[in-house]
Image 1 (cartoon, helix red, strand yellow):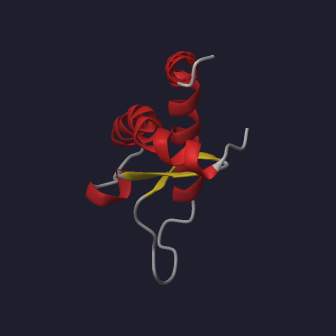
Image 2 (image 1 turned 30 degrees about the vertical axis):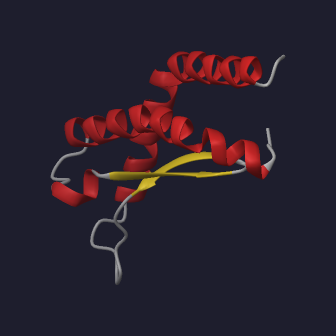
Image 3 (image 1 turned 45 degrees about the vertical axis):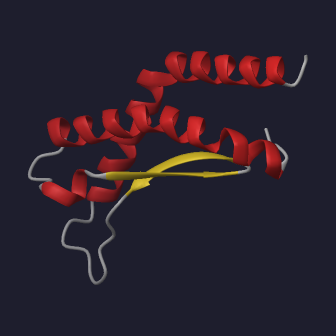
Length: 106
């Protein structure tokens, strides 16, 4: 669902907070499920655009690929984190939209 820029800017901090829960879960899963991942490779960043909120790996390899399967492994833990938190995210988004609607008089 795409929203107006003004609406998005007002909701962005709450959206990033909701995504933060998924990021933390993805980080924990990466540390637990991927062998020899080490420090910064298990960290994720979050961002928000008017089209949605995302979780992505924080670090990118600049040259060569010493571990070609890492991208797939990170994708798997990110998807697992999204799936595990789906109900919670939907509930928090629903509450956010209801609060915004109440403020607007709906």
